[in-house]
Amino acid sequence: MKNIYLLLSSTIFLTACQNTNEANQVPSSTNMIDHVYYIEQQSAQRLLESSQRLAESFEEYCTNKTAKETVVMQWQQTMQLWMALQGQERGPEAALSLNWNIQFWPDKKNTTGRKMSQLLKKDQTWNSELIQQQSVTTQGLGAVEWLLFDPASTLPATESCQLGQAITENLVLNTKKMAQAWQVNPWSQLDETMWLNEYIALLANQLDYSMKKLSRPLAKIGQPRPYFSESWRSETSLIWLKYNVMAMRDLYLANGVGLDHYLQEQGHSDLAERIEDHFNSTLDTWPESSSLFAELQTKSGYQNTLALYNKLEYLKYLIHEEVAIELNIAIGFNATDGD
Image (cartoon, rainbow, N blue to C red; front, side):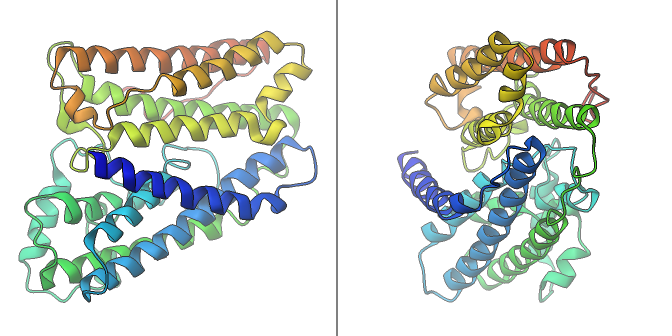
C-alpha cells in the first residue's frame, strides 16, 4: 500500500505543475459560465495529455525500456484526472457519449475480467481499430488496470503487451474526441436561469454518481459487495472518490466566481459557507485507507465507509434541497437514479 501512496504523490506533483502552467490562461472575466467551462475544458485537455503519456509508457515498458511501476504511475495519474469528468451528465453530447468507453463501471458481473481473458486467448494481432470493435469493457482505464494488477494478466508477455498497447492507443483516440468536444462552450448562449439549472445539475449529477461508488459496495448492512468497488484490483477506490469530491469543490468555487460566490451575492452567505465548510471537512477527515475493498472486510471499516457516505449525503442535501430551494431551481432526472 505504501507504494501506491508514493506513486500517487508523484501524480499529484505532476498535476500541480500542470495547474501552475495553466494559471495564466484563467479567464479574465468574472463570468461564472466562462470559469466553469474553463475548468471542464482544461480537465478534458489534461486527460488527453495524460492518456497520451500512458500509451507511450505502456509501449516503452513492453520494449523493456522502463519498469512496470512507470506504467502504473501513469495509469494512476490518468485515473486521477478522469475523476474531474467522471459521472457528469451535462456538457457536449459528443463528450458525454464516451464516458463508458473511457471507463466501464460498475462492473457487477466481472465482465471486464471475463472479456479481457477471452481477448488474450484469441490468436489476434491487436490494434486500436480492432479494440474499437470490442465491448466497452475492454476499451478503457478498467481494462488497463486489469492488465496491470490482475493475476490472470500475463504482462509482459507479447499477447498482453500487444493488447495493452492497442487499448491505450484507443484510449488516446477517445480522450482526443472528448477534448475536441470541449473546445466549444456548450453553455455560452444560456440565460442566467437556464445556466443555474445546468450548473447545479452538473454538480448534483456528479455527486450522485460518486455516492453510487459507495452505496453499491455497501449494499445491505452486514452483506457488503466489495467486488462492486471501483478499482478494487489496484486498491485505490477511496483515492479516486476523494478526487471526485475535490473536483466538485473546484466546480463549486470556480476560481472564486462560481456558485459559492453567486449564493453570497444573492444573500445566502450562510448556506455558501456551510457548503464550502462541508467540502473541506469531508476532505480533511478522509479515511486513511485507499482501498474500499479492504475496508468492507471489517465491521469498523464498514462503519467508516458508511460515515463517509453520510457526509456525501449531507452534501447532496445542501445542493439538491437547500440551494435548489433558495434559488428556485428544479433539478432534473438523473440517469443514475433507481439503478
